[in-house]
Image 1 (cartoon, rainbow, N blue to C red):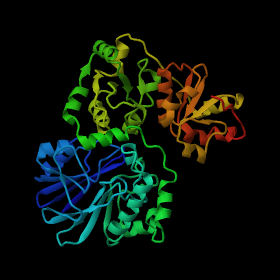
Image 2 (image 1 turned 90 degrees about the horizontal axis):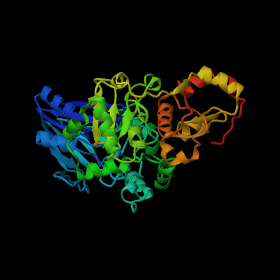
Image 3 (image 1 turned 60 degrees about the vertical axis):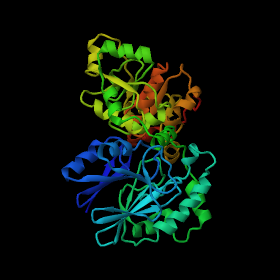
Image 4 (image 1 turned 180 degrees about the vertical axis):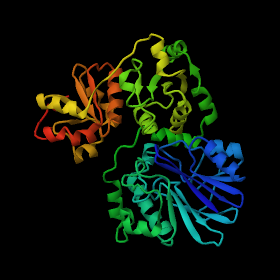
Length: 472
């Protein structure tokens, strides 16, 4: 028996590849099939089952494509009603894979169909549990996402179900059982996840706040719901895709990987009203970019920020990226349901420059340069693009908290005539915000390089006592 956790950092998502005696199962695969097919081929194994813990909200699962390519059976837990061929297993049902067995445990709470899969080894011993979004390391799944699809399912109701699931199905397992969750720190599916991506039942009973032995159901519900932030707006769309089905990722890639000359790129842009996303680095974009394009760099949490900031999953998208990285960008868009990428600028931004077309640039300041300017003018408009919790914990005195994830709904609060100095934690989110503002007619925007991390070690030493104008 072999268990491999396939962890994707940009989505903080864990898929699993398990093999025994030439039979393999995949749990919660990402959209692309290649990683799983390659592993099975290397092991000369047949993928027998694709197990889904629930209808995911934060990514589009690859279960449908993978089943079509391998003949594997898609497995869901009780109450699931997928819009395609799949087997809905009963609570407690056993699935045989080589010499091991998988026991289906219905653990509703994160969603109604949420299911955990308990692995019994060759000797029938309870070895590991794959908990999806029911139990994380240090946390449990949030109970409010279903309400975005079904308003009548309240977070309080689901939290109560989750309390019962944890205490009757999971906490009763031996302390030695390994916990393999669906996500790690950074995922929006929970709020207090640890950085570790595996643990044991025993350790979680000791250190996970939601598994305290003396916790009442009322306390659990209150603590679980308290402090939940608004989930990214793309979540309901991903749920529907996972529930009803979707276009094959191969078709999405074929369309998205269409190379376009400068003239073709301009024609498609004009005729489709596409959004041009520049996925290059935080170092390269400010120096020069296509006027009207926005920056969301591939080297950070690219897909979640596209999902947060682009409301329509079917929005036509054109790409500018470094040559050789086009497939990576299109794939990461497809993982969160953005299937309408129309192509990329062949040769990248260099080709645009060489064509003689107009080029824009963005003003940036180092933390030291901003500190000097701030010390001499305490009435600068400073926007903190971090989340409210980050700003509340520590911030530049007088800076206005203007979270990037709420930019679209709060845009009217800003004045295009004003000059804005924008920072985040490290410079990535602030550059995204600056580029979006620039694309919408805000000419005077300045990105602070290095963000709050740099400001804290330099600028804050000289600006702690200064109050700035908080009017936008």
